[in-house]
Length: 428
Image (cartoon, rainbow, N blue to C red; front, top):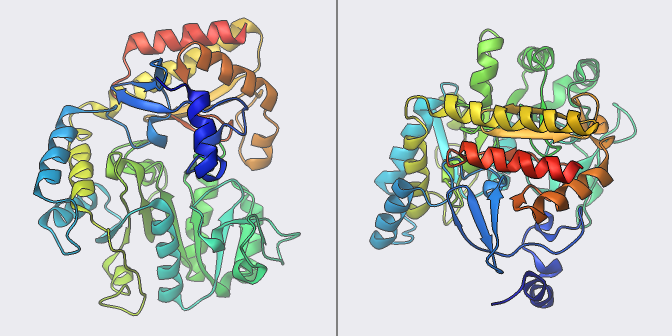
């Protein structure tokens, strides 16, 4: 049996940083990453045979838990038929129809292989539809690692962003404006300055990459109004929230609070692939008709609509439509976050928490943050100690205070109780 430490040492010799996605390296929290060997239900097992209650869930897709029988059956059957064809399949149509049935803002959808690819393509589509170059994103929101989106705020509203990654030339992000999340005044100023040149605004309706931060109803209402008035497209990034916070995504929640609310383009990933590499973007027919081969906006992908991935996603979407699924998931998640807040109060530790559907977040703060700067004020060292305290007690949380957490249908009352008992000890 290999140890986690031995595997990490071996990995660092052949893989940059020893990982294939940076957050897995535990750089934010310190220590040795857990190399996962297998998973089942609400649990993952590391190379040393240790079991953990899993609140990462492959960063969101595993809404049913690991190894759901219906999903495994669909994947095994699809794999037996062939891993990839590079040609159309009926299952692509079935998955598209299932997604469109659940998301009324879209008439058509294009399947791709990753959230990064979907967001990048949605922005290209928005620019192609409007003929405009500029876009707005918000500090703390992550839309993948496309060059134009790896950007931090400039020195003022009249200036555009600066690259946050080496290898991204300044001229690539010169058309990207970065604003503060939930800041209506900044939004209005930006549209006043740049409205005629804005192709789109891209936003996470519930941000999951600065932990869990909701867009306020006034902010989302004004965002929709300004995009409509100035002819910019509203791109809702639901890679994380889609089919995770509710059956109709976050846009379904906001549509209940804002009359007539709907995005112009929606971006999905995570849950729609059920754990396989699959994502999508879509919108009204008049927008989507600009995509090749019917329109001039080019987008392509050799493995797009992969037959095994579509089987996995389709089986997952069918399961989450069972009566009472989201009500039970939301209740289980709310029990967890309310319990964490109660345990912290008992320990005299400032902690606030929030959740929607099967997605949650907590902060070592007095009040729920509304933007990235407020998130940054969270007690990082306390989080790191808490993370390792929970890990030692068999609870696997995201290894960074800036990441949301996920509960699955496989998490039972005993798992929540065990988590809260571990938290009580860790906070002590």
